[in-house]
Length: 283
Image (cartoon, rainbow, N blue to C red; front, side, top):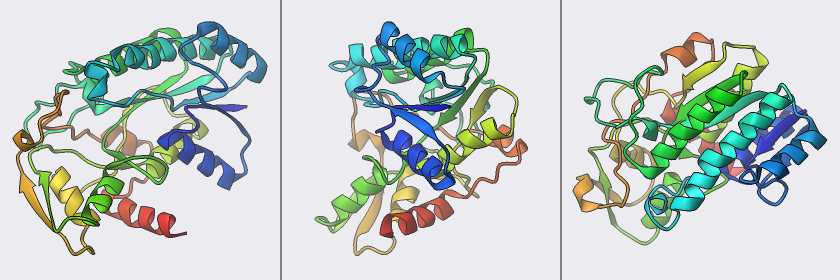
């Protein structure tokens, strides 16, 4: 049996739709069904479901709030929760797929270079720190694990940059978007498909990076220009200094896709993914 944690979140919802389309049975759990921060509740839920595959989509992702008012909840979900899920997955000999983030790196690698899966983690934020601790818990307690780091996630089932840009364009003639943070967008559909691909094809356990592909360096400004290319709005490049935030943003979060591509998984470009997302949204 397949278990999806965080089943009502952006990625968890995408995963449910993907498995529904494929006619695959699963058990969907969000906090109401299984509070991952409570070890006893996790163990009881696993005892009932006895999953063989766990897609661990539950996460605390409020990057700025994690620095102060959300600090305790951030730790409880991303560290304690992931440790509880990892231990339960091991107990029932389940394959665990854990989703992590580019924020585990310091983001300071020169633009044009990519983060490799074996690069040293050095998180600069509370969110990144807890996601790295979650990675370590998964590696320590779950022998059968895939940890997939991703970045700049967008999809049809939650708040994200695409919806934010389009909403702003409804009321403004001009938008300023940062042009000094580099990375690659990731469509939740591509990520969900990669998660199932690794499991279904029995690829080597361990760490992977997954975003959509790109033929050239990409910034949030480039992403916004593509999102709004059919809108009557001017998008201007600006410095990160104009958008101060509690949590430090990585200047370069571009991750190497070499290992993911070596599995045979075909990764669409982020422009192709955005176009497909638009078609999905219209339906």
